[in-house]
Image (cartoon, rainbow, N blue to C red; front, side, top):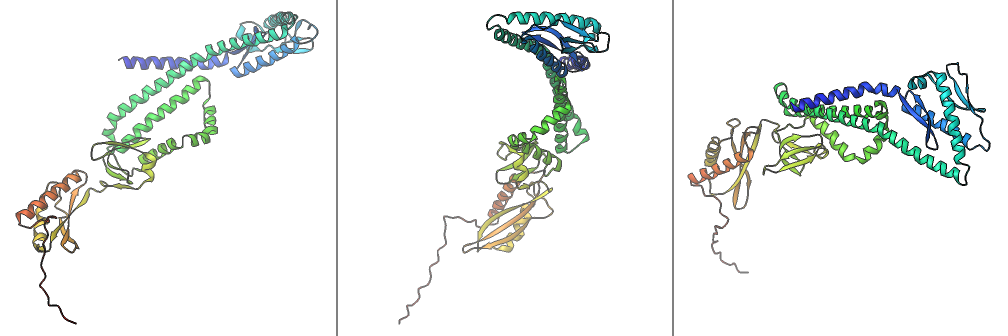
Length: 422
């Protein structure tokens, strides 16, 4: 219940953030400062546009402040028009827009008169601060520092809530993705029987939702999805070189899950580095459990580019047991005894039946090859081969067939031959 309540609370907060986004965008405003003192606030349909307006007005006020003669009083021009403006002498300072008046909850004419008085007062204080020796540099330095601190505070007040909202969005999507992955782990086996397809659907769903959450979080921070995609496109080449191995493993993991050269539970050999049973196929690496019980993570790029031997791709697999016996053994007796004897070993299939072949004829013994077939998916191939070898030894002993012993050698003395003379 606690997790459900947390998800509902995050969803409600996220809805409030998204609902208030357009309003915040319409009410964007920036302050115009002279020597650190705020003279007026200009509004715009976006934070960037209002900030650009404020910087232009600040530059005009700085020119008026540094004039050698005192500027005339500010006056309002075209006060009854839709765009009244404030001028100082012949220098235009700012145009009062309908959005500025709506933000201050007054008329354009009243706001223009208020700003004109504020401009006169700010210019008078700025010129007075510059009358003393070094006053100009001190006033400009102090004003720049105060303006920077005020803008930092305003940016912090504006950015921190957005960052918190973006973090909540990412957390919400992560919780939804984790919950959906858990639900798919339970529900997919009822619909999809292939474990590899189940893993593909789970991972693509999880990472897709997480990526969507990051895009939404970027939008909450003020970055449009188009700008995010464009930025990723510009930096894609650099990221491609920097994250070459990670991206290679990721793409190889997608190809392995899509092409399915092997499945979860198969016994495979990857080149000459790893051999065992496939337990998991992740987007970064493939997890293999070796026959001695160790877990090995092989990067997907290595898996995809290496030669893979799938020992369990076919339902049956042939095994071979090779052994040597002396020339005194009756081959026909072995052919009749061993294939029929190992046919009853656990794990050995009746069809195709076991077969005994003579492999090589050496100087001192004969090498035999006993081939048998076993179910590659239902039996452990190593255990079945061990049982067959034990059965071969037991059958030879029961039949009185002598097994080779490296410590015993048969030495025959050759008959003396007369030495022929010259």
